[in-house]
Amino acid sequence: MVIMVVDGQGGGIGKAIIEKLIPVVGSEHQVVAVGTNSIATSAMLKAGATNIATGENAVKYNAERADIIIGSLGIISANSMFGELSPQMANAISESEAMKVLIPLKRCGLYVVGVNTESLPKMIDEAVETVKDCISGLKHSHHKHYH
Picture 1 (cartoon, helix red, strand yellow):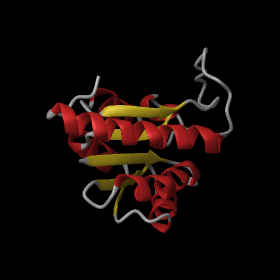
Picture 2: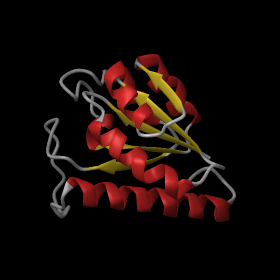
Picture 3: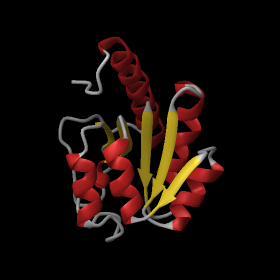
């Protein structure tokens, strides 16, 4: 299974996700870290990602191949991350058939009501647990989509 982690800016959220995700998902699953810039990609590499890529084309290419995409809510919003996440990147992620696991941060002009305001580390833990559950569900359903 291919799990794509997307982040921009300094890559701190992607780094934290990868640090918690890699021990949970196991070596049979491929974790691909895709940064909107090289600093974000580098942070995710330092966190232990072995498959990395940077930029708009990397986001588009990997979104087509991912089974699960994980990142902040801004990864589906054009021009988020102070313009780093292009409309083409947001579109590629949104249109991907992958299951999206999104962390609802109160940034990028997006606010999701009805979501508990947990700390970022708790939200990352929950996102990683969701990916783990998705992997388990995908294994048992024998097809790509987890609904």
